[in-house]
Amino acid sequence: MSNTLLILNARLVNEGQICDADVYVEDGFIARIGTGLSGKTADTVIDAGGQYLIPGVIDDQVHFREPGLTHKATIGSEARAAIAGGTTSFMEMPNTVPNTLTQELLADKYAIAARTSPANYSFFMGVSNDNRDEVLKTDPRTVCGIKIFMGSSTGSMLVDDVHILEALFRESPMLIATHCEDEATVRARTELFRQQYGDDAQAFIHPLIRNEEACLKSSSLAVELAKRYNTRLHILHLTTADELHLFQNDISLSDKRITSEVCVHHLWFSADDYDRLGNQIKCNPAIKASPNRAALWEALLDDRLDIIATDHAPHTWNEKQQPYWKAPAGLPLVQHALLMMMQAVHDGKISLERVVQKMCHAPADCFCIDRRGYVREGYWADLVLLAASRPTIVAKDNILYQCGWSPLEGTSLPGMVTHTIVSGKLAYTNGAFNETVRGERLLFNR
Image (tube, rainbow, N blue to C red; front, side):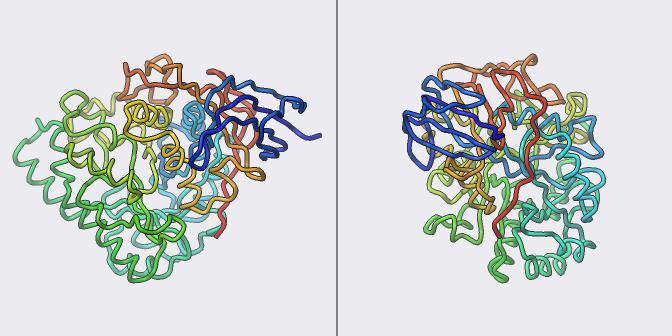
C-alpha cells in the first residue's frame, strides 16, 4: 500500500513566487501541487492554515562530530536539531576522529547516518597531503564532494603541498569544496599576538590573527587553480569584502564553475560582538569587522555569493570557557539558521523568496542534487511548514544541540517551524519527533 500525505491551505514559497497551494505526497515524492485538493484521501492530512510551505533547507556545511568526538555531538543528535529548524538535508565534513581519509571510513559514516539520522545526508571525502589516490576513488554520483582544508584543521587534514593541490585540482572528477585561510599568514600572526598578549589574550584578537589577508591569499590561490584546470570549485564560508571580486554574478548558477557560500553567523555577528560573547563566536574563518558583514550582504543579494549555510560546529560549554588560545573554534547553528534568516526578512534585508533560493534551491543546483531543493511534482517531498506569526525564543529548554548552548540564547526570532517532512515522511510536528523516521542518502546528477 502507498504512504500518502496531504497538505492543505498553504502559502507556497517556491521558485521566486508565493502562492496558495495544496500538496499531495505519495511514497516519498510530490505527486500533485494545486488548489482544491481537499477531496483527496491521505494517511496524514495537515491543514496549514495559511502558513508558509517551503522546500526543506539544504545545509552544505556541517560538523556533526561523529565518529570520535561524540562528547560534543552525534550525527543523530544534530540531525534532530536540524529538522526541528527546517533543515531536511545536510552535507557533513571529514574532520572527525579519525579523519575521513579513506573510502572505508567514508562508508562508516554513511552507515551511522543510515541508522541514526532523521535528516537526509551526504558526507565529504577528506584530503590530506598523502591520500590522493584514495580521494580519486570517490564516486561523484553518491558523494557530495571532496573537502580541502587550505588552512589549519584537525589531525592531518591541512593540505599545504602545492603539488598535491595542483594534482587534485587537475584530476578531480567532482566538486572540490575548500576552507580558505593561508596557513603561513595565520601562523605568523598567531606568534605576533602571542608575544603581544601572552596567556591573557581575549577573543577579540581572533579576526586580527585570521585576518582578511589570510583569507584572500588562500581564496585567490584556489580560484587560480580552478581556472587553470577548469575545476568545479566551491569556496566555503566567505568572510571578507576583499574576496568578493573573485566571484561572478553575470552568469547563471548552473553555468558557474566557481561558486561560493556565506554562513548565517557571518551575516549576523560582527567583531563588535566579541566583547559580549567572547569564545562563543570564535570560529574559523573568523567573524570580522562590520564593513565585511555589509559587503557580504551586498554580494549575497547581487548573487556573487550563491548559498547560505551554517558551518554548524558544536563544542561543549566547558571547552568554550577555556582561555582564548585553548578554546576550540566553531559554534552551533543548524537549529536556528532558517529563523535567523527570517529575522533578516522581518528587517527588510532580504525577501523570503530569496531566502528559499539561497538555502534550498541554490544548494540543490550547486551540488546537482537529484530531485531535491524545490517543490515540484516528481521531486522528493522535503517540506517545511513555517508559522511566521509565532516567535521562537532561543532558550536552554528548547535547544536541541547535544552541547546544550547557543550564542543566540535569549533572542526572539520571528517564526516557528511547525512541521518538517523528510523524504515524504512526517519527521517533526510542533516540537515532537517521529522517532521512526530516517532520512535518505543524497544522490547527485553528475
